[in-house]
Length: 613
Ligand code: ADP
Image (cartoon, rainbow, N blue to C red; front, side):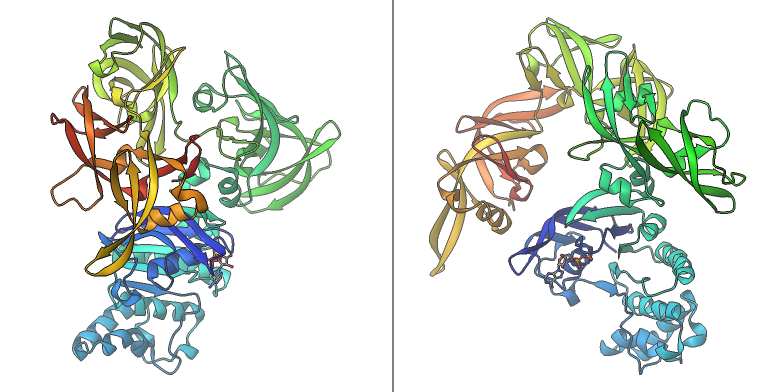
């Protein structure tokens, strides 16, 4: 059993077709992960790279703790199940299942027992002597599964295994596969273009488009909080309705105006909205059919005047196609009605649950109502090193001495709110998110977010190392997540054990650090002038640490500028060739050796434009 990690994995076919682009996925042990997306989005290529059937152009794949980039497929302890079963037609079911074990020369009695118990698990006990030609499609797929199970792999890879089955059998096999996953307790990675399969089977879904991961999360999370319009449209059937709209925000609230419908956002939505005060922006309004109902008036919903175009009676309820008007413009909507909605040609009101709408940026198509906002800004005042905020005060650590007294805004990401007793607040609402419960906390009229098990009346503290301080003159990240450090890239021919080899270095002032294949490949992709130009290395806090004994990562020696103590959490401020960066930990020696994980570094040009990350 094992988890899996894909780190910045890319695949370019024949030097030109970019099939998979910078895919990063962390798969937990025993997780059922579904890769889903339209045909050609790179999901099979990703699976085949995990299986070792396809070379990786750049990036790393780990199975468990082991980097498997160069490991042959047969040594990865994975089993793959394909769409076309790939059974031996002239062998019986039992022989098909046991083929691999027989090749390994496993004891006959052991094989017999294993085959029998697997056949029982898959409902094939009565067919062990049958040939594949005499089985149904579903049974053949079960034999293919049996052949994978018998190998007791760490990871099952399944590539569209149900697409050859008819709709009814597919639904049955979906349930069987989920049950099998629970029974085996092994990691499953499943590829499909069918979002229904993804929604019904996955613990987690990874949505891909054009070789890029658009969003990854639990099915509910993707349905309720799509990060972009693509995921919103791909997940859920019938598809989400999309309309052009204007979102205008002032001091009191925000209005969404799509012409045929106009409503104000709730206080909770306002807290998440990525539109600034006094801004008015063009956006895309997304409403799921499930959140448009015709028939009885719904309190708190926005009312829309419509005509019925079509009614599909689905039994317990009806799917309705509606037409609304915005002046001359006709607007089509899909919604639901109770089963007693019948077609008529008069006006009928549809009610939109505005609490559950989505908004997307008109240009980037990224959400304007994120599930977890990047940060919330809160007003505070600073006087003599004492920060007054919410209903309490806090002494700032010496690391923040340079901040000037007066009014100040605090940018609080969810990680900045931690359990403690410095302040008190009231939890107004909770939402389930992947890492726990997202609490909407109100402290003295300021609304912000925290993740954790906070009581209705709660107390909390601030992790100041996660807070950003904004004054009229400056924005001070107390400990920046990323520091930029100037470097030049160099290639040198060296002799090692009598052989001439080419090595690459990142040069920081008068210090150099050797860089390796993946980083070098990314640098080479930047074009010809990589050895002439100056670059900036974006060092993230998670890509740097104090070097250990027998350090495996490349190391760099820097000067210690000072220690910053954030109430127990300690950071060192380091300097190399006039650039400042941070690392977790504490030290006294004037020089400090740090280890750099170049695979997790970003590179910027000299003007600060991101080149790759
Ligand atoms: P999916 O499984 O999502 O349908 P694939 O991973 O099969 O997509 O393909 C992703 C992209 O890579 C497509 O544009 C496809 O044409 C291309 N591709 C796949 N296999 C090869 C190959 N062997 N040679 C060249 N291009 C390929």
